[in-house]
Length: 126
Image (cartoon, rainbow, N blue to C red; front, side, top):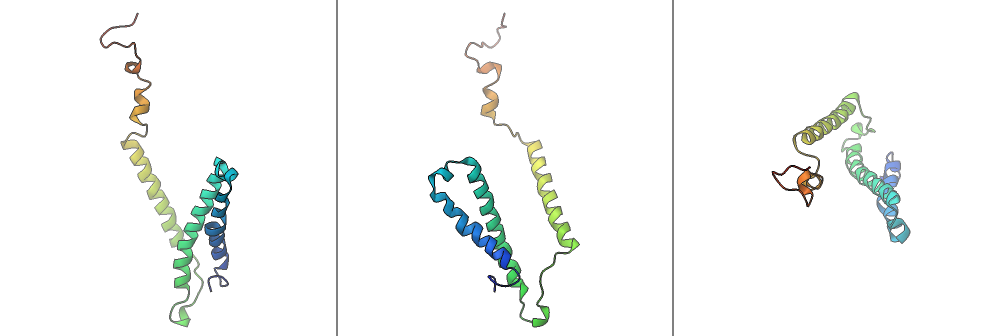
């Protein structure tokens, strides 16, 4: 039913992204191109997300009672929960970036004055 039902489009996109797209990695030219690898990684992530979506939504689609068989249509509450979760995530990421250094200490140490080989502590340069 997943291959031919109401959610067949999601199933076939998931199958393409999770089975056929990774087969491109057999080619050396594709493995060495950063842009193509980035696009492939995004498509695989889409396929993995669709896998979870298909598992959950299609299992809830047909309940044990025929009177409750219907297609899932998101409501304003569903969209609100989705937008709120993105907002909470990005707020926590920004708070984390504000409280802890984002720049590595080894990168900062390389550009400080004490990193130069002729620098002496306590002696002024002329």
